[in-house]
Image 1: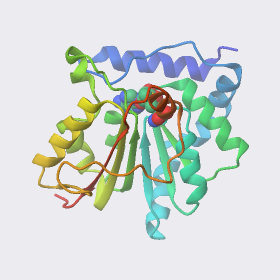
Image 2: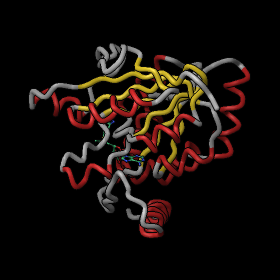
Image 3: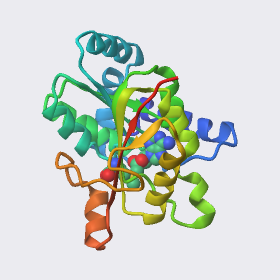
Length: 241
Ligand SMILES: C[S@@+](CC[C@H](N)C(=O)[O-])C[C@H]1O[C@@H](n2cnc3c(N)ncnc32)[C@H](O)[C@@H]1O
């Protein structure tokens, strides 16, 4: 059941990736969606990834004083859906380029009748251009580590990325990051330390405790099985331009 929307999205993604020489933090792998994931993308994605509806919803959420939150790299959506269930008055946007994961997350949204989750399909660096300063919390759990030195430049989180999200965070908005790649974690601390606008919630160069509200994902399980340490970072965006 290889049908239209999924093919269009894959085509669009590969055009975007080829259209400029930008270094990307991901590799597009096509053609691995299950029948259930494909059905969810075809039938549910148009409703849950409608940008005009998302923006209208955000305006209403802001009007009522509730929060707009974003998970970048949602994987199969386990955390996104858990957080949304626990905080029904807030809206949770999930962004990813990986269509099978989006399909799984959509199936869970439907199964659990979740009303406060929406999806942004594509590179977060581009997806964020459609939004102003709206986010209270951003979550980035187990971003692709790109551990080889020559691939470090592909890492999602770096100074340029912090500059971008600084323009999208509300005052005192928080970014939560978890990674089992020590070198990546310390490079993130380096960026936070030199920024006047960002404060490490736990003090200079300190890691945080694992947040109790995070559910175990495939990537965290893998890290724990390998007995790798998981580095947690929470930073606060203190000032707005
Ligand atoms: C290692 S997985 C972790 C998934 C999930 N957070 C978890 O813990 O299971 C990283 C995810 O980030 C996504 N990703 C990487 N770069 C991205 C980008 N620039 N924009 C959106 N998603 C991205 C990948 O497609 C992948 O699903």
